[in-house]
Image (cartoon, rainbow, N blue to C red):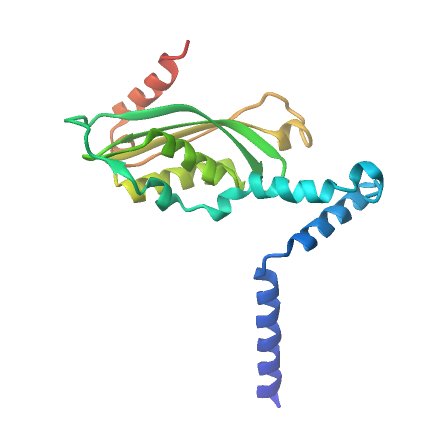
Length: 212
């Protein structure tokens, strides 16, 4: 009897886990938006809100498109005609928009990414695309920083990567402590940037010293 009960419990748990991992349909997503509108106190059936669920779902497809992208495919094409260049490559001021995973409200900012190539370089636009890939997910700024540097480091295998992100979080500006204008800075370094403090200094100098 105990074995039968345990088997039934395992089966029910498996079904529950499968249901939890199943991606909801578009119709279910739109129904969820209508529920939230009603919970907020408005009428999802009024004229101005009738098509809002469809618009929200379409917007989510764009805002969270990072879940369907692959960082390795973005970084897999490199170029070897770089002469004897082996110094730092820095892409500054990569603007991004993301959403806080705690409150699902935006945080916006700029990412600065540098790396030391080994024989080959990646297209500069691909670095910006990597930032967008991870930004277009539910995020914390710390995790976003870590994901960008890990993708660059593991795929390109450079001599080092540096990432600095500065952003303003609407969960601090719009609600809670309501501190508009407060910014958060996160950094992470690998390879030569991590091991040689002078390279960190040079990265910061290039980042700050060349601004108009």
